[in-house]
Length: 291
Image: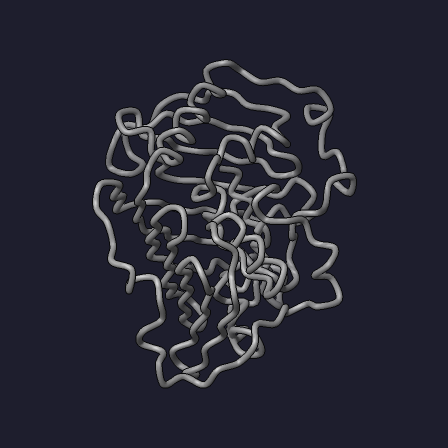
């Protein structure tokens, strides 16, 4: 659950694959701090050099990971607010809303609206599809048999990364543990998510994350992240709501039925010159990335 935010750098006004495919990943692969590969991360502070993991924080991270991993079906709404520098240098906030439906091991649908082009992403166990409704363009490619492998393929082939990716992989805590260097318990909130939450702060490689976890249901309610290597320390925040873990969705929910008349185009990476050097999404963070 690292919310890699793998690139909270996004040009929101980009279009999918030559028009707005990058927006399917919330246009996360443009110019802001995408997560560097292991070995390229600079130490932002001495706290990153010495692992310091508070047992209570680790217990909470494991509990929310187990709750998510055990669910065969998940649906939720992710509202993300992220900063981008303006032409005057001041950070401006932009927003996206993602309606997420997941059925393990081979069904995923993400419907995205926001301060940029709308986009839709589908995976049905055989193919992944990215649809740009305004342009009526559809990219389709063969996909691996699992959600985790498909998320990695989408990232490598088209720069697609969702800020909630680390919440929907098969084992969120396993991904966190690989780069976890600091974790501590902050306290409780009775405001976030309309319920009581436990607050955990941690550093996963080069990302500082603050996470609000429901006391009763162990579901994540809000995430805030800052890339420690980002000189502007732009902030990224994601609110998670409308959780549903007991329902189901028909097979047709994971195909782009509304795009039957769309023009077909190939998947393409928005930055092909750097695509081969990027770290696989399933292994390296937040949020988000991220973005």
